[in-house]
Image (cartoon, protein in one colour):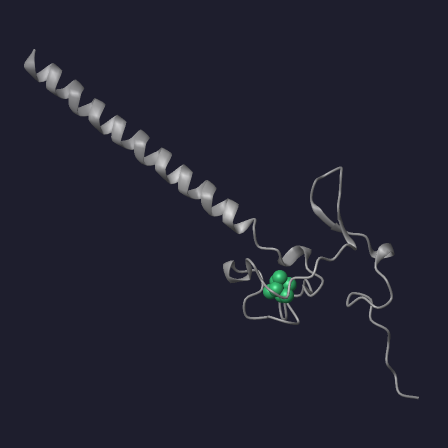
Amino acid sequence: MLHLVLCFSVWTLIFTFLCWRSLTIIKQAVSYLKRLHQIPCDKCVYFTRDYRLKCTVNPSIAMSESAIGCRDFLYDNQRSICNGCKNQCIDIRKIPKYSLFKRKSTHLK
Ligand code: SF4
């Protein structure tokens, strides 16, 4: 009978420890994701959406945690939030001529 009680208490301790550890990991993941969502680069006018040069002002910190609170952030109101999918979308028709995304051809004549 003593063996049964001892086995039950050991498994209870192991199960409690695993639950506590899982909750801790989930809390850390959620706080890390919240921090990553504070990166403002996808809403910035200087963000190019090109992996070779992500930002024309601060390319070394673009899309990283260092970009949180970037002093050069300038909100790009041409990129609107889609109501249907709640994702960041770019409507090509709304991009003005002076935007980086629609460059004029510069051929020398
Ligand atoms: S200027 Fe700052 S916020 Fe804007 S894209 Fe570059 S690093 Fe990101």
